[in-house]
Image (cartoon, one colour):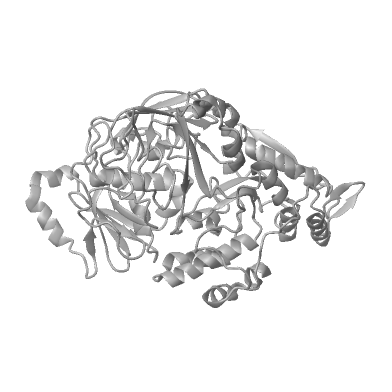
Length: 604
């Protein structure tokens, strides 16, 4: 039914529909929802625990991105938008607390209801929710957003929609999603889907929108001006509908956020030194220690701040495309792992200051344990023993070098693995089993100077094996297109994980997405064992079962040698204008777009 139908009938009709759609036993209406247990904050909370509720409004902050942009639509596959838009200009039904593993609180929705088995979820919209143009956020907008993003949106939205059995309006401000699968996390994922305005896109091509057709959002910031590939200016909407909500108190404090675009990180750093940027995140510990001694820093106009995080390391490094031969052979991937001289590279790049990523969930309780699989982890892996790397059961650790530039022992091991796979060296050239030279290419983003430097060091080691690798550094548009089409041998991957991993793992390495263009399964892995661990993790009803499934998944991914890991970004390092302030309490997820710029403020 149409929303205006219900408005005419008012409260009496609303009461009737509430009775008509009464929930089965076990359904609860709440202000929030957690993956396990209950949310930490009570219904009458006044602000998030890691914000300053009295933070002043005002000021201007300027940040920088490398590369450029040719789109202002962050929800479709086409184009390269500024990544910040999804977070600053659009909202979801619920908001994720950064101080809990996985808890959501009402944003566009005032309440959420689920049965015990979470086979469906129902949201009640706030009557006050408005888009930035002043129009009301309706159930019709919600349904259209789910359907459109699920069929025409970016690949990250497509998988969820296939698991929705039905979406329907159940009251004046109520919308219910019923799920086709037994998956407790789907209710939370639904709460995080962005909501767009249906009327904006009537008669228009959403998937191929022009740059001037930026989707209308409901968030605190709106697009004020832009110059493609140069800069983007966001202004805080003085009429923002949710400014008095407890979930928003003390957040989104800057009047203006300006994003400048630079050709590479070196140019961006010089811009920061010159005072053109308000803050800069530094990912290299050696540079942090060595090159931030410049006049503005010495004068106290700029300061350095560090923020710890309790989340897993995630995976950062060089991803190997197993869709292509000979990278489908684990012995070849293993050889490439041995040839990567991490100790020497880390010392050269960071002065040895940054710890190594040892597995996908290292640095957290979710990480696989050393040695052979035991207990429930072993039980989960055993049915797939003949399909998985032997090291997933017996135990696996990344190759460790001797710290020297030549790395002789690991190079010898790499040579032996290649020979075992049918390769041979002739006249100093590594030949594949078919007799052709073993050559491949690294696809990198133009301006990614750190990865370019790491690749250069790695190429020298590969030359010692007779492998003539090359590097292709391309602009943002080409880079994104080639990754989307899996048109690379080796490229860069960076995946951050929460303390409550779930369905995003299916998107990253699920077999169903391996051949889906635009998929985030860059390595192209298709493994029934990995799929089964993700299913077990998502369907777990106890913390113990969940933990065992994640540790088993970590074993499979790490022992599969799909990614050559580099070092961790275990501490967030932010150099910033001394007038930018942040709360004393740091959330467990540390620094993120939900921290800076969201909970910072400007103080003269």
